[in-house]
Length: 411
Image (cartoon, rainbow, N blue to C red; front, side, top):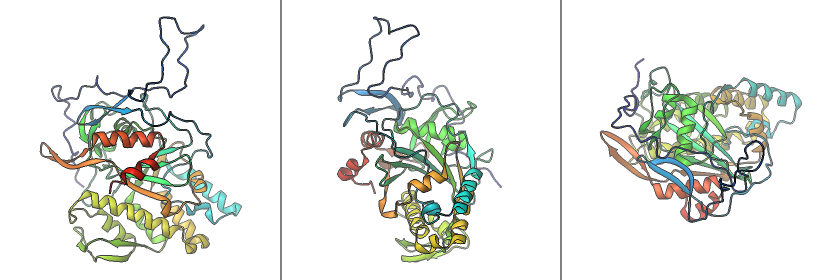
């Protein structure tokens, strides 16, 4: 199996091309109302002024490199950050996939079995070594980074060392009201600053965002996304989409709408006719890999992946799946086998807290962007800097409902 060279040349860190690390690096700021740090033995010295909340016209100190290496500062807008009493403990990702776990199972044996599945999920230290992080502005809201790889994709044999690029990058934002979920897709070719990898051999350069995981695993992916958005990430879930063959078959397949007739570029070269059609696991995985046949390329693939998750959620929460314990267990086990999560992720908490959520409660969005452009010989996606500033400020402050009502979802 051959290796796949990263999408950009960030491995050679030339001094004359390295971004200025003194500009735009993240700094931790305290939320409004927090007391200044008091040195041992008493109040701050008179010569040290107490910090004050910036006026709405000012920029917060937290910066990130969101657009071609320039500082990306999140403006203060809307009401002051509020603290809400959390209505639930730690929950985690893929609200679209695991709702059926406990919705129909009140039997103690089933609950204990699910607990066992939770403890067997693969885990990684997703936040290890991360010190400079954006603050969490609203307690009770949750931001989960969903990273998707495809270990069976014929176009991607993996980077050196066996790591795959993350072809799916989604921030799942659950508001403090817990009555819906926003799934914000970040284009894998988005041109951003990637900080240095833990070993110092990669990164510290402008690159396509999907290189971050290949160069530094979960921690570098989290650091890159947090510096780009200014949004605090609470949990991380890595999904191997190749495993969704079993997940899809466990629920009896899914129904999806094909927007145009296409022929797959991968063997056995299936033809997908336009219109509503039923997919088994192999067919669904093949279809959501396609991009070259669509006028908007990878954006079409993102839409189809979102449609697949919605269809899978609808099928998983249908009466037939919930009523059949053996089918439910097959579904849960197959989903768990595809996941690698952070150390504090709890599948049981996720399932319980979102047992009432349905596909109509999901809002699919795309990170604000200006479309494709060329950087050297690379085709990249350019962030719409000004719109992205306001968008991610709304996410951090848990006001995405207001954003959507004014600007729409971006599709």
